[in-house]
Each structure stands twice: as C-alpha cells, then as structure tokens.
Amino acid sequence: MANDNKVLKAYELAKETYKDFGVDTDKAMETLSKARISLHCWQVDDIKGFEEGQAESQNVVTGNFPGAARNAEEVRQDLAYVFSLTPSGKKINIHSVYAEPHKPTSREKLDVTAFDKWIDWAKENNAGIDYNGSFFAHKMMDGTLSLTSSKKEVRDFWIEHLKSTRETAYNIGKKMNDVCVLNTWIPDGLKDNPADRSYWRELLIDSLDKGFEKKYDKKHLVDALEGKLFGIGTECFVAGSYDFYLAYAMKNNLGICLDSGHYHPTEQISDKFSALKFFFEDILLHVSRGVRWDSDHVVIDDDSLTSIMTEAKRANLLGSEHFHIGLDYFDASINRVYASAIGMRAASRAMLRAILEPTAMIKKAELGGDYSERLALSEEAKALPFNAVWDMACLKAGVPVGKDWLESVRDYTKKYIANR
Ligand code: RNT
Ligand code: ZN
Image (cartoon, rainbow, N blue to C red; front, side, top):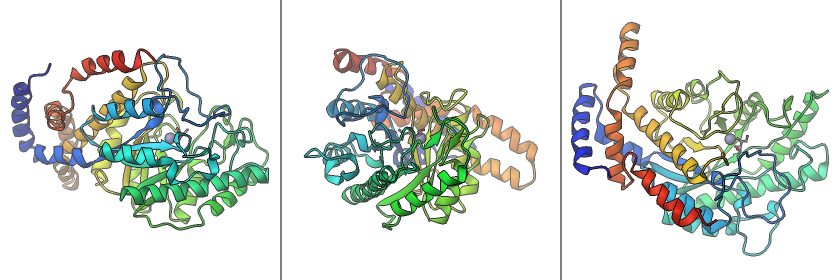
C-alpha cells in the first residue's frame, strides 16, 4: 500500500519545483477535480445494452474475454467502480440501447422516463450525463444505412429516433440541472464506390434538417455531430464524413465531435482545436486509440493523448464548459473493468499533466521570438515531477494511489466479475 507520508513528502518537493516554473500545483489539482471526463458506458458490455431482440450491430467489437456486464445493475456497478478509481470530474455517456423504459417501448419512441434509473445513479455518483442515439443493431437498419437510406420508411424511422433522442437529452439535462451533450453518429456508408455520392448526401441533409429542426436551450442540450473516415463495411464511402459534418454543423449552429480514431493515421485531432474554437461554440472529443486504423483500442497515456490534452490546455479549452471530453473505445479481449479504468486514469492523468505544463513560460518564449528557448523549455517541462502531483490528487480524492488500484481491481474482479 502506498504510504501517505511518502506521497505528501514527494508532493511538497514537486510543488517547489513547479513553483520555479510559475505553476501552482494546488490550483492544478482543483482544476482537475472539476474538469469532467465522460466515461462511455459501452466498454463494460461490448455495446450490447438492454434492448430485447437486437439485430446484428454495425459496431464491431472483437474479443471474448469472460465477465462482461450482463444487465443494467452490473453495468452500473462496474461503472461506479471505475469512477472510484478516477480523481477528475465525471460524466457518464449512455446510448439509447441502455434505456430501461417502464413499459416496453420501441427505440424511436423512448423518452426521459426510460432513464430514471440512470439519472438517480448519476446523481448518487456525482456525475453528469451525456447521451447518444443508437443508429445500429436494429431491424430498421437498411444494411449500413439509417438516415441516408433510399427507403423513405427507413429514413422516417431514424428521423423519429433523432428527434426523440434530442428531446430525451434535453430533458435529461433539465432533470440533472446540467448540460447533456447529445452526440449523433450514424454508420451510414457503402462498402464499394458509389456512383453518385451527392445523391446519398442529399438524403442525409434532408433527414438531418428534419431531425434538427426543433431548437433547444443549449443550457441543457448541446448537439454534436461525429464524422468518420471509414468503417467496417463502409470502406469506400461514409456519407457523414468530417467535411460534411463540419460544414453542416457550422451552418446549423450545432457542435462538432472529433473522434481521435476517425481520421487518416497521421492526422491528429489535437491540431484542430485551435482552429475550430473560433467558429464552434461547442466541441466534443471522443478520445480513442486507433492502432493502424479506427480500431478503438483502450486509451493509454501515449503521445496522441498527451497532445490532445496539451493542445486543449494551450488553447484555453481545458475546463471550459464548451469543451467536452469523452472516451470512446471497446476492447472485449481483456477484463473490461480494467479497460475502462486504464482509459479513464490515462485521460485523467494526461489532463493533469497538461494543466501542470508551464504553458505561460513556453508561450512567452514564443511571443518573444525565441524559438530555441521555446523548444528547450518544452523539453524540460516533460521531465517535471507531475506524478507526485497525480498521486497527491488521487490521495485527496480518495482514489487508490499508484499501483494500489491493481490490488483493488483484482478484489473487485474476484468478488463481482469472476462468477459472471
Ligand atoms: C463509431 C463512433 C461512435 C461509437 C459509439 C458507440 O465509429 O466512434 O461514437 O463508437 O457511438
Ligand atoms: Zn466515437
């Protein structure tokens, strides 16, 4: 077990070191405790949710590690446990397929009452709620098409779904006295080269226009649109590409969602914030890890995550109420609770490291035209004792320090997961 005294001692030394760089570590920990990371509920059950009789999903999850959560209680139990390992602020990100309607209700007709249990649970866990319509795993999917289908009845069904998810998200936001971010992602696209890309995109525009017609108070509902480069089964054409949604969202005063796995392999979403922030009121991130492609691997503390958090900090977006950070990945090949906790802790830790960066000093060097100094300082910054502050932040938040969480998660696994 970590020794509290050791943590305190290391923290005091780190505090002095950071002071030399003009950084206040106490303030940094406070910022971390308020900045919220939205934990996606779907890692712990492979995006199955609770709906009866689902069709094949357009989200491909690989792996068959035992112990997936099998029902609402197990999903919420696992998620609450992951929260207990995270020192930053929290939200839970849920999908329509995780609804628990009081009487059987078809997906496009769900309303906020289907989320009563989630709302109570989130309040108990001091977390906010974000929401997503589920445009997949349903008999009304036209293959990989929903809002973009050439069949009017298919489009109408999914337009209904879009409308009701917005109403639901707004009501969740109201009940939570908070903002609920509704992300709309659809898998729509084609496996092979379309003859008329414009035809499909025109259908999508028409569906979106209908779905987003109603305006809501952004105090409780922020809409975001998530584009994608390609998917499995939609390799040659995705109707809702990044350009498409960037333009559509801009024109219609909606937010934009950037998923770190949805771009060309060397294209980094971190380079986009400082451009988009001037034009978009709200930006949502789906922090993921694409290995060679959009593979949705568990988020780890790598260069990509570091630059996401650092660029957000440098653009003064970290902690802003209009910059929303969520996780999005699904790995069924390892213990799913470890997977959720590893990503949540990595994101939280990288965020703290970014908050602690001596940005003011580095920016000063740049503004003074001294690029050598800028580079040298950036390098020094990397070696600052941020982990001592991270341990202290965990201690203060009542979260296991250092590798203590491993003992905890082993116990949790034995007690709650091993017999599933
Ligand atoms: C899929 C998108 C989308 C989903 C979730 C489940 O490519 O990233 O965000 O992962 O909605
Ligand atoms: Zn995503």
